[in-house]
Image 1 (tube, helix red, strand yellow):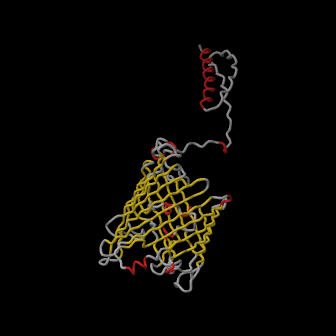
Image 2 (spheres, rainbow, N blue to C red):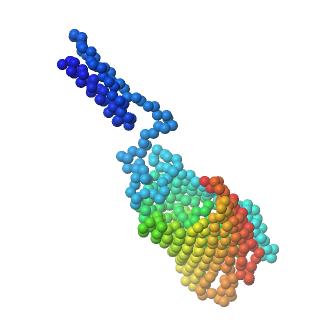
Length: 449
């Protein structure tokens, strides 16, 4: 009986060795021949022969597979790739991982401009008198992302604050540009709250480092006092509010029809103000219809009530802004056509005139070899295209305040480097009644990370 038990123990131990090796992902070693057991000595138990251990192959440290760091049992650590399609983010976050699960991604850009403006001795005291270098941007941004939540903050270190009347005087300051929290509930529903860029028109929605020219067109940015006669542009600054938006939603595949929307409820004044300028909020909507990645048609609308002055002398006017734009990208060529219109209607003083302004731009560019980007743009701004209830003399003066700008541009996106150089020549045309010699040459050096 003792001999039979010893033999069984030996066979069981040997059989466990290949099973153990298979469980560890190794090939099972060949069975080792077993010698016949030695007859037992009286009053002694037979000693089983030790089983041969499976061969162990050491894995170099550089090839070792680290243990998984994602615990699927925790709902807050589900990888983005495993989320259902309606919940997945548009792009996975990359950056510095924190114990809280947030991934921090820094970015930024610096833009330095040299500007030379012709001066007309017979005209203003400001145009063309301040040629030289300007800091357009010194932007630093951070985004922290986890699952479907993103928190973003950006600072502008070269924010241009000039006097309202004399735009040759002012200061360059640090200012908060963006501060928001965004939750992507579905591809068709994103919720964003904070200080943000309001989707309205195509040009102002373009990230600053991706602008084809050194700056936005005159229809969007307006005219500064050192460039010509002061005129406000028709684009919007950042606002503080709440935005509902979506990814681009395709009806079939990404080569077909797509839709995207954005609805914003916000304060209608500058984000530098701690409070709204009145008790009425601004309502902004934008809808884009696209065909693949080639054609995008956009429509925008904004309703706002703007209050200026201090109580009891504060006055409010209603503003209705409309935008329509068409973008075409094909074979390295890019076309953008955009129309803007704003209607200012007095609210507190109905007898004041109702004023309409309009802006237009058409630009085309081409991505040539070696990072070269030749471009042309025509832009128009008419601050008083339509004025109601005014006398003939005033109307005659307002009919001459439009400005047209032809811009020739050449950009160079340095291959394999985060730098870009842009050279623009602006041919500025005013009405003959107030035409001045104020053509402008701009040279921009840009670095982004």
